[in-house]
Length: 322
Length: 261
Image (cartoon, rainbow over all chains, first blue to last red; front, side, top):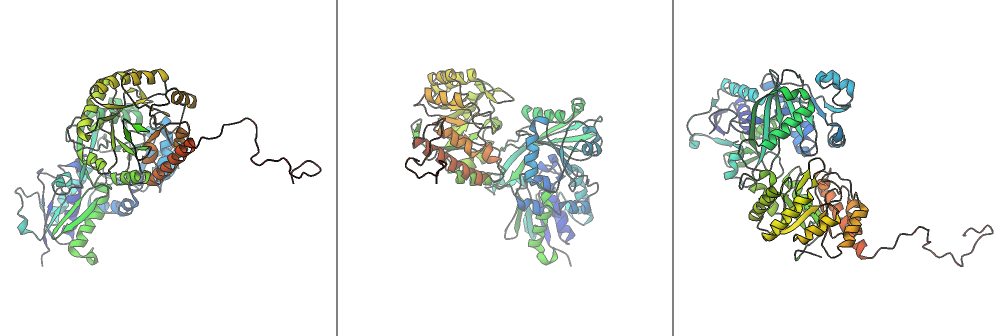
């Protein structure tokens, strides 16, 4: 007995997580992406933070609840999932932001100079106070997407069919094309995000650092080989131009504020992408006949794709098999 | 009180930045019963219609839109942004911000006067974001502005009305100019205080957008504005240095020690 034939459109995080989840249910999955590779869209520029508690600062309860099992999903599906927590700090004159962040979130402890030094020795004496969210994790999005691609192929899936797939050959079509779906989803909009990658061997960080600022909150996520991802701006815009000077300036200033040694870092990459978002900024699964859409991932692609992929599986296979 | 000939349905103007989602923004605008919403074009500027999806959401709120030049640091930049706003939102109204100082986002009043003159000559109806300075106000009016938007405190600071004396003097000096207290209002009581000083409207953004419950805070501001406006219209009593009992004591029975029974 073979499972249903399913075409997944879009090889970003939503599409790849869904494809792997469907293949694990026995489906014959084919993934197609007009970009010709895994992660040709916004996912490539993501932070990869699996931080349900920190995100609760601005996300509704629904997002928090649906993301609680995300870290476990990633740990069982890709290698190198880091679970070292998240650290939230604020420059001295913006410490009221730290109190505000704390009021909106939970599952953290407020720590002082000693603990900060233990957790992140390189941030010694730079901050008097921080919020430590011990249960959170992160992945490197580019490695994680590649790992999902390998896993899909191991599960019998077909990755990136070169030709525009003939939809008539499939039992289900799952559209995960992000902002490209604006053509047929009028309530979908782009939310521009900009990021940079820096290499700075002088600094070691063990976990994502979120630095609060009333106008320009940023995060710095450590990657392998002394590389740091600094992101990300939030601009209500479908603008696909390259990163702006203003964004680079803001992001680099933030890195420098976190640690002056970033002044000597190499600027490896500076990029911009469009997050797909619905009006409430909550990712949604929608169905029309045998067509299912998973979109509007906003800034929760890595965090919420496992839960939303489960919803897709529930539609196709029924909740009893989920 | 009319703003360039337009009577607003409410004296509460609401900014549209910094909300956690457009859906939350829409709830807040509804709860505030805002008379005007302001929207920034600056950061999306170069990409023609790049912000159209968000701007369409703003326009669907069905509240008059006052575009602004937030984040502009020079006259030319502000003028260009204003011209683009006119195209996008099909309005001659522009809330003019020319920022002169990065830390306090303090208005560059010299550039502000210059940009007001240029835009007025170009047919705009300018709402200049200014300080409480009387001389600057005078220059702005001479440059063509018919509305003034003095700050309460620096943008986003939530400090309320920093210079009561200055704001009272400004209000007293130009009794017939529509004036909106813009920026710095953090709590509903600050808005009430602005109306009690005789100001005609307030503009709020961060205080609502960054509240734990934006819709609830929007409602609180609506009530605070109503209270301040009605209180001012009702001609409040004067402050006095001495206590004046609200119940006459003359003729009341007194105990042997003189205390009121």
